[in-house]
Length: 492
Ligand code: GLU
Image (cartoon, rainbow, N blue to C red; front, side, top):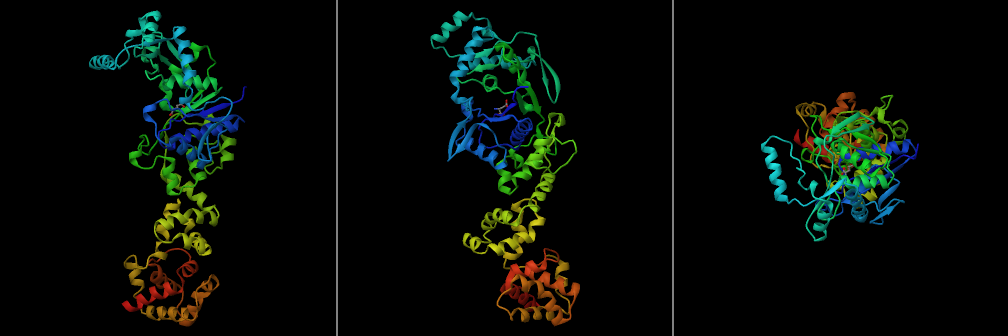
């Protein structure tokens, strides 16, 4: 078998959709599993949809996610560059190539010039709609002799080039996931291949590029399935060898609808901003539409590469389950070093105005304890500030009636006083001191167990439950604890 070459070919529309990242990932996994090559090509032939900075954005997202490719378009030193032997890899730079192949199709009688105005096409479409037909080009220009059409083109008449599909021909192809597929040409439009601005359409460009770039497997979303027969016809028209096809099930939300921007997070950037870890997002995404044979759910990228195959890709809808993503990501947060999570958490703490840059650089150890204290209980980093707000908020109130009641015990004033008295003996609280503190209070007061811990916890955090007491004492420090405890005493 020749070398496996696959490609991810996004249109730069401004952001990378989570479904796009999954397509890129499956391409990557298949390429690496087969020691093949993975190519990034930019499909920017729709000049009306261009967005400034979109290519850079897209590449950044792929890079962040760790989905590496071998050839194509890269960003280096803030510049878009290309690497590989089959460039250019940006379609808008390949216009001459497409032009040549469109001419070849016209010469061979597989394509024709069409001069119909937009008004005429609209009229035809309206008529068809009224008759209950599927709107389709009616083929008026198919019969213009090539000589006459060429003359009109030479005279500067506005035109497009259309695919000349034979009538009533079954186009067959095989999809590695869906099996054999047959579509009759009567159900397909005479697709525009070259627009009046001289740009090819997606259909023309994708076939020419996949052929010239020696792509062996086309792995893409199922929304492209209806386009595939047109592509198959083009391969045959050129006499080119066809690639293998895999159409991936669309990524759906829990209601089985397409994930859309309106409902919330859909771009890779959104998840990155929430503080998902790349390996967590990638691991979960791999499972949206694929599962390894052993049904393992926590997998490194290397393990995915080893286990990946199209046989285990689902035929229908991959459901994107945010709870499951959170579970997978939480696993990776828990197994990451405290140093890594601290570094990631700092911007979120700054954003909440809990700390500033100076604090972040001076209080590294303190921050590590802070993060370590709550690391087990978060699924993504943006959840962290909420978990530590009791440390930074000046005012803590008992969170509910139960908590309030715990502060009303008869022994509470004695306990609070003992805490203040004990703390006044020291400069500050270090970890060693924090570890022995509760024992010291117990000895001084004779108060034990729940009676000792619960009111102390509520007084300084507002809540009956929460992280390790030793860490809380250390993190709050002497002054804060005295302040909070005094408040309880003043209330009583
Ligand atoms: N440019 C298409 C897209 O934006 C690529 C489709 C394909 O992979 O053929 O998704």
